Amino acid sequence: MKPLILSLTDEHTGLLGSLAQNLNLDKAKLEIRSFPDGETYIRFDDDLKNRDIIILNSLDRPNQKILPLIFLAKTAKEFGAKTVGLCAPYLAYMRQDKRFKKGECITSIYFAKVLSDNFDWLVTIDPHLHRYKSLKEIYSINSSVLHIVKEISDYIENNVENPLIIGPDSESEQWVKAVAYNINSPYIVLEKNRISDNKVSISIPNLDSYLNCIPVLLDDIISTGHTMLETIKYLKKANMQPAVCIGIHAIFSGSSYKELLDSGIDKIVTCNTINHPSNGIDIASNLSEHIRGVGVGD
Ligand code: R5P
Image 1 (cartoon, protein in one colour):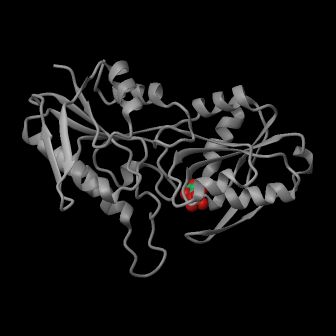
Image 2 (image 1 turned 90 degrees about the vertical axis):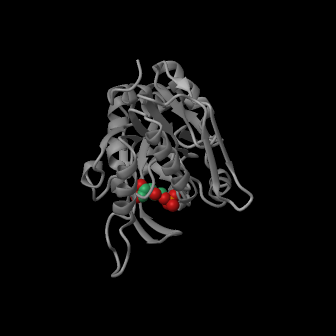
Image 3 (image 1 turned 135 degrees about the horizontal axis):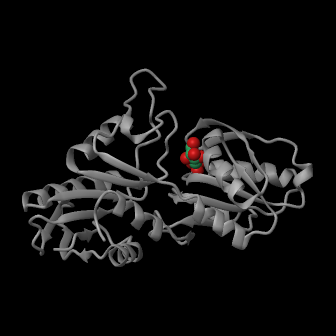
């Protein structure tokens, strides 16, 4: 029998359809709802015995998803699924990778343990690897990471004339350098200092020789938007042209999307790892390859 793909929510309808088609998967018939008290009801309507199961869910807003995901995985195993894998285009709880203050919980470690205990494999996209160099440092299951460099390079090449690729901090250098190399354009990487959850400071070099370029800000995550907003402020002071902002993962907490749209930029484009109106870079084909790589699908 074909492997089954399913999702806890309907946020990935387009992506789920593309993966099902590319990998020749069946879409699971599933009833999921909340009881009036907020508890979750789940019922599978497929024969799961000896089948590979792929659960597709980005883990933005993770606290509300994680418990139902565990219920799904455990139930699938109970009904005899051969493997239950998690395809989480955005992987949460990667940023607290160190105890910065005495007494803090290093959430990345416990989150990795919960997922490793309940799934057989994990496929994800550009997780926030900073102090961890690989997911293997905290995940004990088979994990596969894909990078969205080609798709971003293609987007810029086809849509932005004379770009200057800008990374707001040292962590972004990995994408910025690779994309700039692919499309043969200049790049700079700025220095960021995070003062609090909602405050960052950015130091920017002299940009006089790039005034004829379109600044393309490239970052893995746009969350509060302050990293981008602060950078945009400096670009404006430096008389640069309106920026194109590209993020891989469109978290956009609070009013950050509107704030960015209103900040005098040209446009914001994100990848469809998290469903959002700014999605403009499709990751379906790359993601299909990686799922095939873990041994599931045709
Ligand atoms: C952090 O190092 C990441 O690469 C991003 O720069 C960060 O998560 C962006 O967050 P925010 O939008 O809240 O500034």
